[in-house]
Image (cartoon, rainbow, N blue to C red; front, side, top):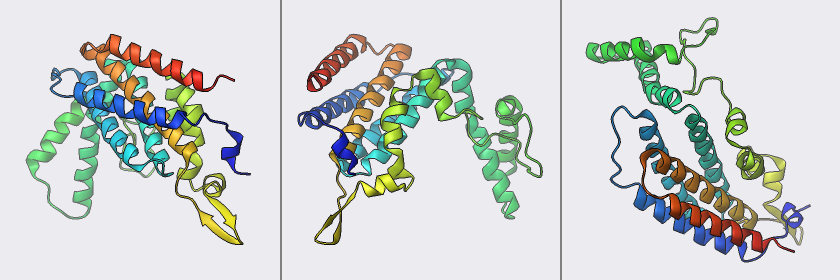
Length: 260
């Protein structure tokens, strides 16, 4: 059965979401310019980099929807939001882990070059070792894998999963858009099946989906506005009242679409 038939949407919903997504993107872009960050403010630095990346994803998503691949961008935006929300619950320690993971990344690049017989400048190795001496313990595995010469976690957040982060930050996006859009990303039968139909014994592939567009735009709006709220809270951008008004108006309008 076509899963879109299981959902009854007000035809005004997707156009409204599209307008709201464009509006919050403009606000995010304007608010992200010229923001001063202290060199020792790891969370401020991280939050701004995540905001910049969310803006890029939002621009791409708006140019892509209503194509189904817009859902892929929505999922990565949700992923980034959960990482930032999880970090916010212990901002100093977790942001330091995120920022210092560049040292682990560089160490792996150095090891890869050396294993291939390529030269690495001694000053680069020395600088990296100094970084490892300071921050390496933040990323070291408690039990390194047998036979592995790499003693560090693969990701900056260690063994924490996205579900763990969602349990801390709230599972609305995880259980909603992120879960529903996963089948298309993972080549599942449902995701592909929703895109095909039969017409005179021929298969017809529809690259567009209003359902995916609605979910993706909803995720875009929530990811941008929540990222802005965190940035504003930490860096005092004076956006609080405006973001509250936008959120209230958004919820009111969306609820009006769903009233029977």
